[in-house]
Amino acid sequence: MAKPPAKSSSKQPTKKTTGRYVNPETRGRVTRRRPVNADRSPHWYGWLLIDLLLFGMIVIVLNYLQVLPDSASPWYLALGLVTMFSGFYLATRYK
Image (cartoon, rainbow, N blue to C red):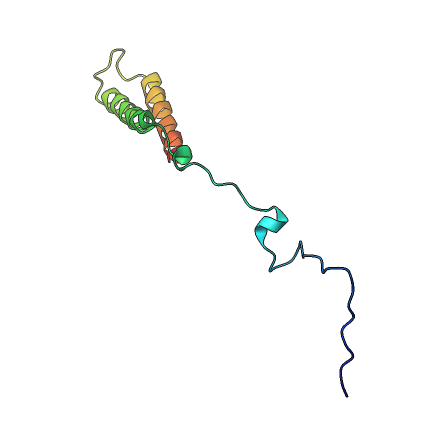
């Protein structure tokens, strides 16, 4: 038994716009490339991060050794912890 001849239609087959094997450009799902320097932190960012961490540590140690004026004040401990935590926060955003 022979196969019947294929129908000749004037319509061209439409391109697929969804599915697994469709070109992403066809679907419009391509993310634009970002510039190379767009995902880097500024030069001063790393130095600020290190300065905040060191300043917080120095304030806490000097408070512990009672070198700072007003003897051992809890405000010096709070200042040291806040600066260290802000340094840690900046460290999480560093690229």
